[in-house]
Amino acid sequence: MRALNKDQARKDFLRLRREMTDTERTEAAQGLARIGLGKVHDLVAPGATVAGYLSVGTEPGTGALLEGLCRAGYRVVVPVCEPERQLSWCDWTPETELLPGLHGSLLEPAGQRYAAAELQELGLVFVPALVADSHGGRMGKGGGYYDRFLARLRADGNPVPAAAVVFEHEFVPAGSFETTPLDAPVDAVLTPSHWRQVPSEPMYT
Image 1 (cartoon, rainbow, N blue to C red):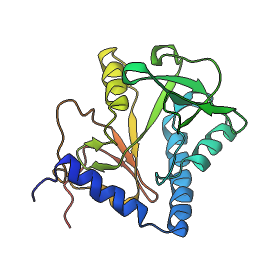
Image 2 (tube, rainbow, N blue to C red):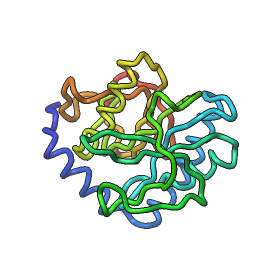
Image 3 (cartoon, rainbow, N blue to C red):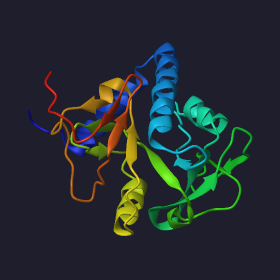
Image 4 (tube, helix red, strand yellow):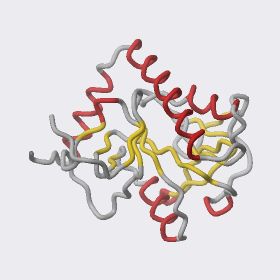
């Protein structure tokens, strides 16, 4: 199997997202909440911190997942884009005020910003992705924010697991798309029907 180059892979997977129906998106968001909440309960102590993100556009919907985490008593933080492609983090609840951020089309939470090192009892990070593979390879939209964030976490000795969030068809066999040493790998992949630890056994289609 020949790996797709990044440009072609992004083009193909973005097209597939645009072609999904509203019903498919709604069902996917429900599945992500159900599977994700169940796994968080297994992995993260009640009251600890979970880093998520506010989905936009055609991304897999994270709203129900984040709301469920808040109801279950977890501290939820979401990212804020900073200059030089860095991320800081703000507390989030369904009532949090959202304002235009560094990228005007993206709404981000108002409030105090924290560096990752300031997030006490961080138990899990949910990471956006366009596609993820069975060896933990992840491809985002090309901004590099999360690659830098995860690389800094690991450099600081923080072993907190990172889970990519994708639609079912976006979890693919290793080698399906190009990765480089700068692409930070993930430890798990959340889809609407499964939580998969990676690296995992080879996938065959």
